[in-house]
Image (cartoon, rainbow, N blue to C red; front, side):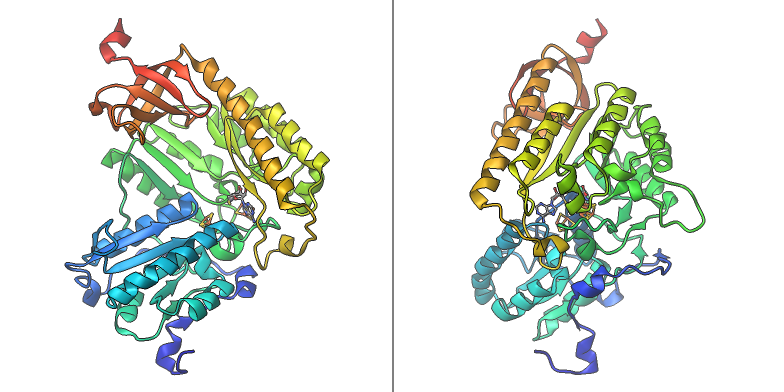
Length: 489
Ligand code: SAH
Ligand code: SF4
Ligand code: F3S
């Protein structure tokens, strides 16, 4: 344990889930004056960094901020671990297997650190916000140099310097969310860009650790979001993904304004950027105004990720999702009516504590009713400190695995049918790059975010082009590019 000096205390601030659960009424300040301290501006000159990211798009986007900070400090990215002077694991705490991967990785990195003691090894992200994780790292992985959390990313330059010079593990995790720091550098690559519209989550679904690791809901000011999207449009990005754990709560924390998510989407629809998506929307707060705005389409694509988690009212109640199956189905019907051809995707948890076969079958029947385009499916994973972790769970793992299999099978069937139905159509595809398995084939996405493999010249990468769908598989379609001259005929 560290020495109890005043100096050290500053860099030994471990997390507390109990504190992280609290929600205060304090105003959130927005800061526009972030700068990298002078003495850190050249700190990374001739040095290399590598970041491994786990978890959701929010975390991926945090990695872009961390990369931006490191590059402003002079560091250069590398993919070679042996070349790296700083290695950071930006972690996810949402399920146990996400955490297991990180602990496994730390086991491997131990050897690298032994070979190269000057290497700074850091852990950031949602796992850092959990006291059990920090304690385990202190005990079992004492060679880690730095732990920081999701609320103090902007402190990285100062913390990195401290970690570099200190012999003790530097731990600075804020359990209470901080203010919003606006002008952090971000390193974005490719043709699609993510933009945070809000931070945190106040929903406290009983299974979920996110409200503890990401703090209370805080919305960025509309003018800041809009300015960022405009800037990305000017830079030539083709697609924007607006991010929040619960985007439908956007603006609810504004004291003196009734500007909400629908208003923001309406304003962003006027910006000259080809495609705008958002994730994640919570079915409870998805209002009619938002449906009305999305129905105008334009750059607002007709795809909505609307996680339902379960089709059983009893399970939804115990998950504290605060809507019923009927509410969800009614919402889906309204959306489908207002936005013909809309693509709906979802998240599901199977094997929630006590889930009966009948309750699971209600999830299957909901899938049949909605006919989702795709979904992420998970086996329930108990998260220490959440209410569901102390619920009696008598569902054997074998049964949970079997339910996951049956659910995936059912989802695959609808994806396959939907893809088959598109054969012969001409769809706009944003060509993202070469296909992972075959460099002679290009891969792109439709407005509904469906994967298309197409044959065409490499110059198409980064462009939205018309593609005739010629074949279909369960999770992707095949197509042929139609050159502009052919379209004009
Ligand atoms: N804010 C988003 C979800 C973020 S977490 C929303 O509410 O929709 C992404 C998904 O992980 C969740 O939708 C849920 O399906 C899954 N998930 C969260 N906690 C989990 C747990 N303890 N076990 C299994 N899956 C979980
Ligand atoms: Fe987790 Fe629920 Fe918040 Fe989504 S809405 S992040 S599932 S607590
Ligand atoms: Fe994981 Fe944190 Fe995202 S727990 S899913 S990285 S918000």
